[in-house]
Length: 260
Length: 106
Image 1 (cartoon, rainbow over the protein chains, first blue to last red):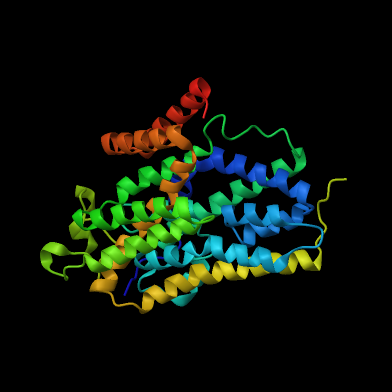
Image 2: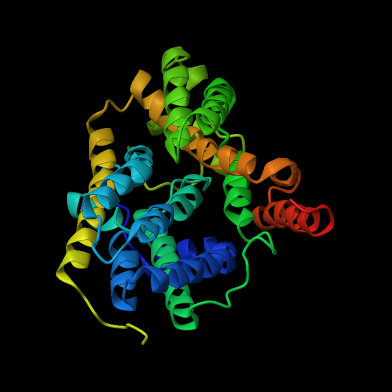
């Protein structure tokens, strides 16, 4: 069982700092959502309430866009489920971060999970404690809400994110973090399958179904390519330090589950 | 008139509905994974999951951004492999996309 602390000030700060490169894009997109909200009749309070309780950018864009004077609640909630289905997989993949920790830590730690702080957490060479994840989430939430407020108050006049390629920041950071997630050859075929699945999904399926198509293809291929837990083929997360490509990921690095 | 602090019951309920389903999927995914074995095939699949999800998030966005988006993604990957520096990789990709849009359009 893990005896490491769950949420330390230092881990919150490191998680926040890790997400710092996303500040400009998150702020601008938050502002774009704020402008959209003024056109759809949400109050600023309602928008901020949504940003803090739902905390999922793409689902919020679609929901605010669907918002009308008579709110199509069911449509909005169903759209939210479809767009956010990937969070089931994202939540599942966070198992190493929460391993051996009490339920209340999981309950508190899993709310502020966006794609960005999740990806940053998973790409760390050593599995971080939940505070790292939460620190990134709190930072993004503050920036996101600040952007919402700016956009709402200005109600326009926001620079077009495309001009400075700020829209591309998310794509770039996710692509770069993928490189950091490489754990060895066992990743190769599942990753190729995920890429192909998401490309096929992108052309054939609506909305964000491509994420699920790609992730599903990756899951199927990784299940099929499993060759057993032999010492030369350490794949499960309990033994993962031995597979790392980087020297820092070696058996000498302190880890939250060092006692296991 | 700027509308700051109106909270209609319909809006609150809709937002709470969105929040409950989203949080439920986040926590539910983790709790389901906790019930899976710590070794063996499922552990192997879970270990591959972050990369597979992440790739499936950005590959379609790069495609949506057109030829310059794909070039930008390639530049990001190359810069990351070469420098192992997240910020450098991000600047390489975003810089290429910004320049490409400025000089050749989308």
